[in-house]
Image (cartoon, rainbow, N blue to C red):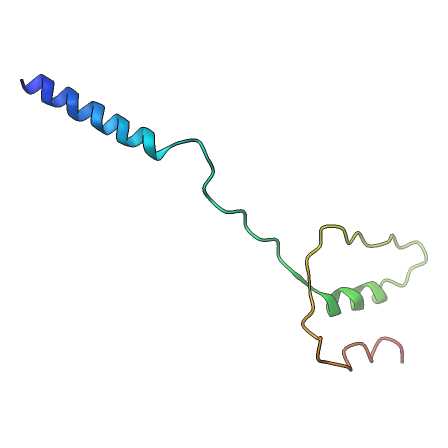
Length: 78
């Protein structure tokens, strides 16, 4: 009877553990970090070489932190 109890406990534990690991990834993907639009534009203006490559903006998540700042770009074209 003792062997039967141990086997039952082992089978129960195995079934319990199998239910915990279903092979799916339950972790959410980390969000991509956002890039401040104002800093991005100022960085692009700072690249003044004639052979500078265009910036790849596909897939970039921009944050617009200076929406209420009309002077955000005043220092670029003075």
